Length: 116
Image (cartoon, rainbow, N blue to C red; front, side):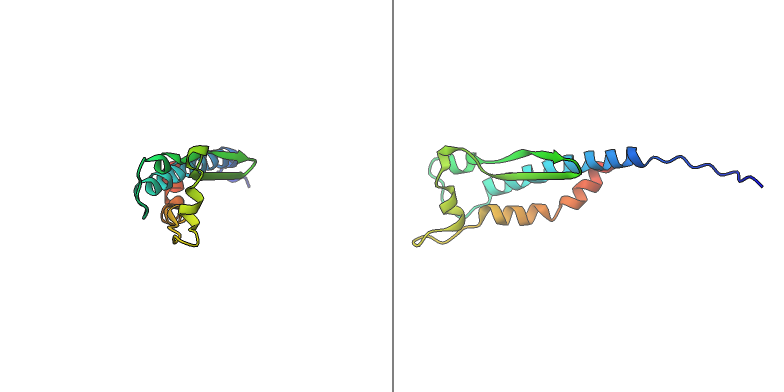
């Protein structure tokens, strides 16, 4: 007795679409974290150099692994590490960590939105 049901497997296409959504969401998340870090910090900016050094990088994709990065880039703000982790005379501000914590919490919802 033959069944009247037919199933078409779309697994590869779905996996491709999920990966593309994850890449888009990762880029959105790192861009949002960089923007938050640029605008929400506890140190006083004199020249704007430290803020301008905070950037996101395009997601790196290797197989099924997707990595997103944001941080302080470039030699102009060589001192940013001291703002972030502090010194013996200045407390740490944790600008990047706080921005990452706040924005990475939204990553899953960004993946779901990008997949729709």
